[in-house]
Image 1: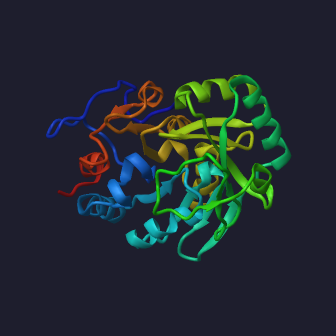
Image 2 (image 1 turned 90 degrees about the horizontal axis):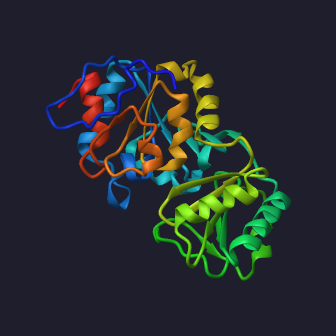
Amino acid sequence: MTSALPHVPFDVLPGVFPDALPYALVATDLDGTLLRAADAVSARSRAALRAAGAAGARHIIVTGRPVPQVRHVLDGLGYTGLAVCGQGAQVYDAAAGLLLHSVAMDRELAEVALGKIEAEVGEVFAAVNQEGIDAEMLMEPGYRTWHAHLPTVRVARRSDLWSAPITKVLLQHPRLSDDELTAVARSVAGDLVNVTMAGEHTVELQPPGIDKASGLAVAAELLDVSGSETIAFGDMPNDVPMFAWSAHGVAMAGAHPELLAVADEVTLSNEADGVAVVLERLYGGR
């Protein structure tokens, strides 16, 4: 990772901040990062993002959620920029309501990868995000969702998951932890798909080469900015590629150890407005 700041991880405590230079692009994950509970963005975070914008920085959302599961957040923010969605598979123009970039996952390859994983760990429960701005999330029997407010559709059998083009597969295991399932999936199917852990009960399979960094690179080119001008915020292993691409990676307090290991900085939690704390230091406000 190249960084405009020394690569020395540190904890950010209220009132104790290192010197820093502002960045042209602010990339924020959503769940566990910018969002508080119930998909809320605090007034302080909104003000900090406005201050960054007034200083000339652009804000871009980079999330594992597909477009249909994130549009209500964008609308609530009055967000009119680009958003990287679906774990990097989609670049969405919020102002125009259009997908500018979308990468579908080979459904036959996804089935093969699932078969290899189940041959190693036994039955897993799967869901898929379909491709498109109005697409559905389909869940097979046994798959559980912890976000009841997000649109989902229950199907009768696994074969129904492949009824239309998809961008990714989500996996759960009845006994293995998320980290254990991720490790096994990478070991037996990592040559076929990209495997990442995006949050609690959220182990995901994407097309090879697709991650938050690849999607962010596409969006940044459209905005005529580079990784060396970008500060990124996240909390989970799926943010590791984004941190590697960006000049400076800021992990939230309580972030996954895999992300903390590569972070340049650790801020406060999402509930304590950790993103705003850093943006206020860089661009003013508060």
